[in-house]
Length: 397
Image 1: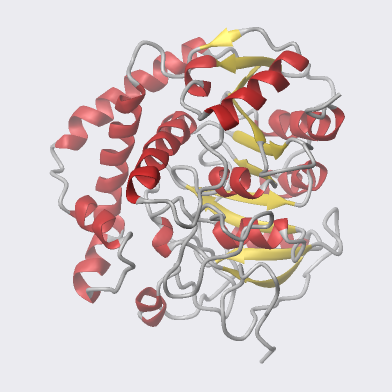
Image 2: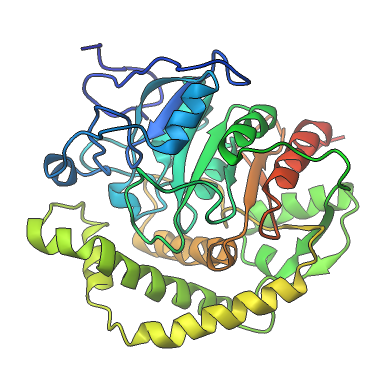
């Protein structure tokens, strides 16, 4: 049994470290890999960030395919990373295992639910880390911590060996120390390479989505877009209220939670943190009849979005509506953040679109990240875009 990982990020699961060697060689040779506690590693319990879930489940019989692929390409697993409980949060706190430390300001939250994965990469304790993203659980911690990250097209990466939460929204995402390594990991996980003969994506602004961001995010993104001469404007929400996107997501996700987590919840009566327990109670109390209305709404909204988004476009959209929240943020601040973050995340979530996140090299203050969404299947093109833009166009002259 190896010693527990005790490093500055606080992003690793406590207890003996979960390390696994490489099983092959490839583009990821030497890369250190962290794995979120929702993803199977052979011989280890996938605890879902909750001790009662961990106690009621046996060790995994095999690696999840995403873990196996990265190990086969040369990455070695150096530990399991902390997750918000069963992924039902965007703040990055865990009352059982601790809250990972923000890499730039100890008084800030790292964002969740893939909080540990973002933190260990941001602190330089891992080169790559796997997370999961349903409503923003990779995108928000990437934006808060200032690291490169990817939520792929829904269904591009198998969800075998991943704790099911809301499967029609769930994806396996990943973080990397830079956009180049993010792209290399994408080649492995997506099983493909960028096509150099395809033209670069045309950059556009999702202006209504950008308007949901606070000035501290909105203004630097506008300034960066002007420097990049991005002037094509698009509408993420069209004529609908962004709150409809939020409500549809909350209901449909909640009903999937009922189906996939509800039986265990009622059987085990698990202990959850004070912020998480009410969310599960609300989800389990939903009337399934609400799903009929919002499933139809989702189908129509996704169809209209597909008509508005040209196949060669990438839309600038905030990954989070604000910089990293204060650990002392009150209920009002957290609620406002949560609503807007979920609405922004629901654009890609409802439609199953890929979304990439990478930090601007501002060199000071809290991180500001650029994020782009694109049409289904444009994952490789988004990764190439991030690799091109992340270092070439800084915020300041």
